Image (tube, rainbow, N blue to C red):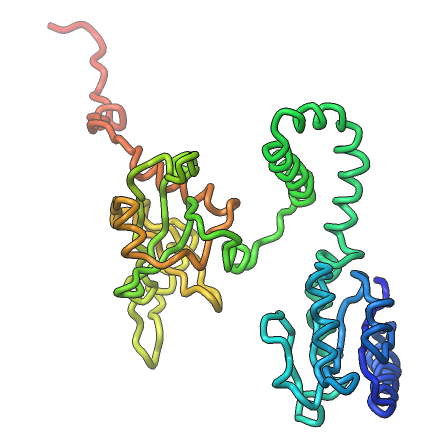
Length: 363
């Protein structure tokens, strides 16, 4: 594994010495290789800053103005550098509130030491996030390969498409590049974590198949079940359908009410396990609980249809979207439930216990 690259933007000599000593102890005591890059000014930070860092510690006060560190943060955001950033300063209230930090810490506070921050950064590093999304990450490496080996060799065809409709060609190239990325996971048999089931917040307010929406008046959650083609936006700005199909989510506690002190009984736990494996009933589909979404069970019997106007008036914008990989299974179970036909019962008893066969001559 390559060294963890840590950027520190700090003009105080004593703080830099403390950080340097902490990194040295971190290497010796925890056997974790950290490459420390020091910057004492905004100008120096701009010269050294790139997308290769796994973390950055930034002081806000680097000159007389007192919030110079925000300029470095802005450069990281504007350059689309995917770097976890911690602000460590004596004036935390001056931090730019629009940036997604791993934390804003005041110098001298408990939990704000350099060793504490290194542990935070290393925890993120251990997830693989910066190795996937960072400038040296798998996504960047794979995209470079797709660009060189897949897309550029086909450039003449894509140029021809672009002459006809450049915006449509751009979207097609995005889909094509993402399809190449998904090949990385085609043979992955690992179990998924619950958070992978959802996209939150969605990158668009537009509703999709699998959008989770909350009723304004009750906070009850529903999931949009229209086919994807229904929800395509036409040139007039309207969907391909005049009705939005929604299914209500039943909470786990409503289906498996346990005692507050003892929890679920053994039989309830077995039923819950069956339900989570989607083996309890054909009309339930399990949605796992996460920190940002309480989950529950889609109840296909609680199906409603609303006009677009009713839907927009009744529901908030979707804050959670079920990811495409999991939408497919949800739609398949929904379709199977409403497509079931059944057949008349057949009298099969005589196949199981056929009548005795008569032999010999009758008198």
